[in-house]
Structures are given as C-alpha cells and as structure tokens.
Length: 295
Image (tube, rainbow, N blue to C red):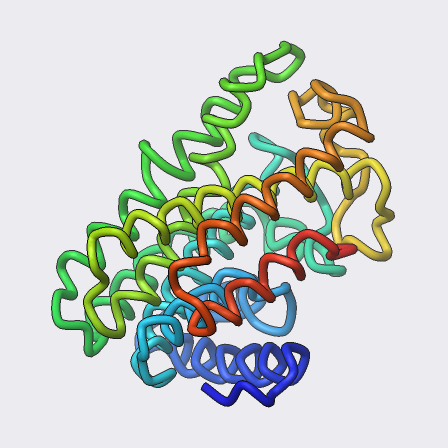
C-alpha cells in the first residue's frame, strides 16, 4: 500500500485491474455456445462502478494481502453481481430496458439467453473462486454462496418483490436491504480480507460492523439517486422504484431524512474502521465515495 497515492488513482488502477481479470475469466473453454459467451461478456465487461471489487481490494490491503491474491475473489463477486443485474432487469422481475448506459442483456440478446447468461455467470464465479490461492477455498465458496443465496441477495430480492405496493417499517426495510444489497457487499469485504493475515476477534467484529453500515449506506444512496438522478447519469431508468410502488428509504423517510440516514451510516462505517488505523484508509475512502456518488 502506497499512502501517497490518491484515491482516484488507486481506484482507477484497481478498476482497470479487475477489468483485465474479468476479461480473462470470461475467455471460456471451447464448446461454449458463442452467443452465450457473448451475452456473458456483454453483461460484465466495459461498465459499472466495480464497487464490490474495490471493497475486496481495500479489505485485502487492510489485511496485508497481495492484490494478485484478491483478483479471483474480486472477480467472483463482480460476476455474481452482474448476474443479479441481468436477472433483476428481466420482465418477470424489475422489467428494465437500460443497464450501465446500454440496453439490458435481455433486450440485446432475448430473455432466454439473458437468463442463461446469468446462470452461467453465477457458475463461472464459483469456478473462479475455487481456483484461487486462498488457504480455505471451500470456506470462501460458502461465504459467497451465503451472500448470494436465499439468506442473502436472492432472499432480499424475494422480500422486495413481495412488498411492491406495500409499506414497510424501517427495521424491516433495513433487514431486506442488508440481504439484497448488503450481503454481497459483506462477502466482497470478507473475501478480500481472507486473502491476507488472520484477523483478531475484535477486528473481525469491527469489519462486520463496517460491512453492514457500508452496505446499507450504498442502498440508501441508491434510493436517493433513483429520485434525484437521471437515466443519463445513472445508466439505468430513473424513478423506477416509485413507479413500481417499491418500498425505499425515500418513500418511508422522505428525501431529506434519507440523506441524513446515508450520512449517519457513513459515520458508522468510519467509526467501525477506527481499530485498524491507517490500514483501513482505502475502505474509509470508498465509504466517502459511496456516500457522495452520483450514479
């Protein structure tokens, strides 16, 4: 870790790095149907904030990991995230025609191939993670599976769909988003940290507190941007949540209070990093980046 490198430079280098890693991981074996391979690459490459890989690399730095060791876990989490976006955009889910500033995967390739591309990306993510140089690859796969599965991202999406047109109490909304958004963010952070030195019990708990606060902050800002942003800046349809009657922090709290909630979660995330000192610099910078992002 070079403390003299500005966050914009560090993050840009990591974004370029993960792009190369993802491109390599999506050079699929002979026998893969060309259209399926193309749809997978379309869904993953050339767009997105790469927030989850950045969190994985930053957590790896906190634990003293070589970035090369973090490459595989960071790519695996991003492929799971990309598959979730492909499926979320399908007409049977959120029915969105725009993603990352271009037509959604099902618009470009058809619903059936998009569904298969998402399925294949999830499988590729676990294949990538299983090949990593982690000391316990099985435990890493279990961690990612929990973040992506019924107790995590998929479960949170199911709760979200079940509450379209309904109101939710704040604790229930936060539970939903801790699953839908936060669980995969936590997986990225935990997998990145697992690439370095073992954490003490107190450090482990502090990193979990950070992951929860950062994950919820990310979602609150998403809800605010859905109201204040535009399709041009967001790269996806703006105002979609309100149009579909989805419960959000803005619909529950109002826009000013939702912004205050995002700021409070940012402060909680910073407080959780205090035991790590300077080693947590990049995680702290990502927290600020999440809080002030415009897309």
